[in-house]
Image (cartoon, rainbow, N blue to C red; front, side, top):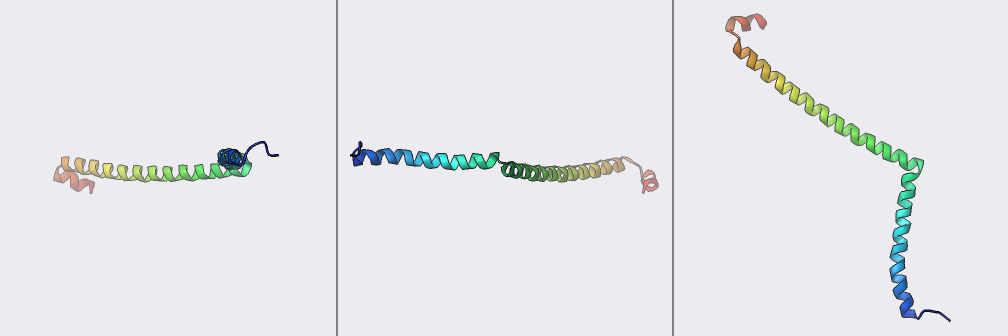
Length: 89
């Protein structure tokens, strides 16, 4: 004899089945993250992200520096007399 009627068993299974599936999926995810291969993947992803950010920062710095240098050069050349400009060029 079954201790639970059919209706009670279905309700119980409906609650525990999704929870079990969730635990299995999360368990696999954590297992994957904690294995050496998973750690290596996380490091590679982190290195790629950092490299992309560094390249963006360097490009922005280079553009800003070039614009500031050009502006300052123009400003200083504007302060010179024609004779002084001729000697520099």
